[in-house]
Length: 213
Length: 213
DNA sequence: TTGCAAATGTGAGGATTACTCATGTTTGTG
DNA sequence: CACAAACATGAGTAATCCTCACATTTGCAA
Image 1: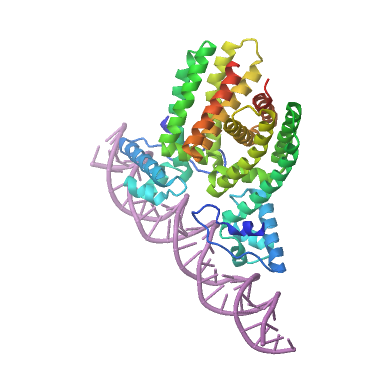
Image 2: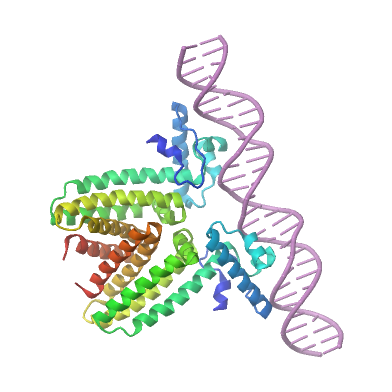
């Protein structure tokens, strides 16, 4: 897992490989760098985050930063990856044991609420996923993450509707998941009341599709 | 309309006001600048577009560029605004005379196809709307545009379901529209086959919501 | 026509910022 | 304890957005 933070290769367009921290000291320093970046993103957004500022706040030199992260985006990517890892575990747990329509309805509804709450409460998460579309590496990460999450949903659907075309179920699950993320991004960029309404409407639409009328 | 191209104020965060071209000569030059920008975006994407390159290709100096556009984003914004204006006219026309469920089904289905085709065929449009989330001014423009388009859809729904809660219809129309845009963005970032499937699934879901089972 | 103010045109240079690299320091290990 | 590999440093490089002082052109009133 620590390897993936550093790899930063991401896509195949930029970013040269960097050293992975192997000593205790450097591992701690990398953590400080990520914490500093996280704080700065929370304060000003990832776009306004300056590499020099990250280094200063982490108490390291600019050179050390680039020792472990190939470029600025890799730092954001590393933070994003932690969120996705956390999220996936949560989603897998919520959907693993669903075996009937009512269970799916409850689990899905709860998941949406949790995610919406996270988006509202976590400025870093909000910033990263809002800017997702701009960065190819992040878009890729989100796509992979979304597919993985949709996979859990697909598994449930296959259990509930064994007669249905598996490919169609996969498409449906993936689309619903992506729409959920789009709805979140939308909801946090409008007023709170309207955001709540939109999330509720999404939930209703998605459930109609997932468990029928 | 020419005023809006230049205003560039957009959001309230950056961009100082610039002069609007009042002479024939400068209007033509502004057109050349936009054409050059458009070509460069088509070739390399708006992110890689360099202001110096735009000026060179338009046959003007870098200073002239900044005479009419407060900053780089304003150029992209000006192009985006043209697309939205064109789109709105098209959408308004397609939905204006819809008066029954079957008509809505046909019109909506056709609109989705047209938009998907545009996204596939127009690299500039694709680039601009893909990067929408990154730029606050563009996000705002998309939001305003989306609300306007959703308005047409809302009008149709109110005609078809006069008994329904108007606020709920508005939310539904807006959400469906935003999901459509999200689906387009998604569809063009995966393979062609999967993209087609996703758009088809979206169409089915949206229509279920719009005209019922 | 002519004079002049406003509009327009120019491009060298300022300012910012991501990122490099030559050099020095620390750590683990035979 | 020697020594290679890992780590740390920060002044400097490069790229790029944007400004500004000054030159030119245009439209128009006298």
